[in-house]
Image (cartoon, rainbow, N blue to C red; front, side):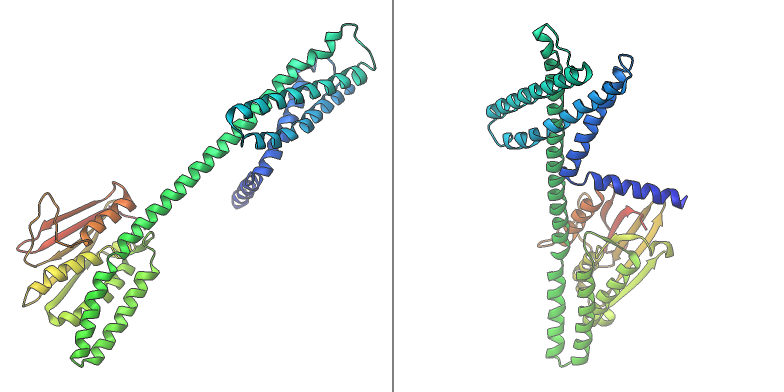
Length: 365
């Protein structure tokens, strides 16, 4: 089984290597085409003559066609840079000249080699191959331009897809990195306050945690997904930084199913939700508040929830808008870019107070 798989893999690599360049593709198809012409022509005239001399003439004719059509490739390449009318004139003239030359070669091979010097009395007998030659060279030209146009369309499609992918990735990265300045501003503000209060050890600890969190943020590509356990480690770093600011006023409750730990999620997808809870819930309560984070697997879906017990907010049609807020909108756009329509994002009031944000995404490991 392994030998068969290896053989198939090697064969596939060889075929890919064969067609990886236009130069190699041309010579391969050019040779196979004229070789196929010789085989089909011989089979078609098999009952006509089975002698080796007839096979030799067919091989000579195929080789002559192979040789004479090579210059057409370079003529057509230059003609494609001309205006449509001039290109058409160059193509037709080239096809006609090559067809006449090939017909002449075939006549020589037929009358001198196969007929051993026999000369027909009717002069038009010398031109019986001309029409067939024009048809054959015309078919070669049609295939050449057909393959050439297909390659051009394929290249344009690849360039378009590459540009679309790059724009898509840049959009996702922009959405992710747009959130960092908000968090960074708040944290540096807190560190500055600690320094002014001469709490240097606490400030140093906060700087160290901030460094670890930013390293995680920069190391993880926004395009790629990470296991939820890594996301939880990063959120733990973030919450440790916020704990320095709020001390006992901030309580965090984790409820993560073991099976959900290995689920793949967009990096730092929950951090803006927790930041919002701290900004609009915990900071508003003098006695402090609680943030509950849960992750559970239901069938083929992963359910993520962030709940706080703050004062809540006005929610209309499942949407909550805050002045100068970018976090919730960015999360929705990131989820839409990564999962298309296979996700849900909802905001609701929690009981007895607070906000609950629920995210449903496909369960992937």
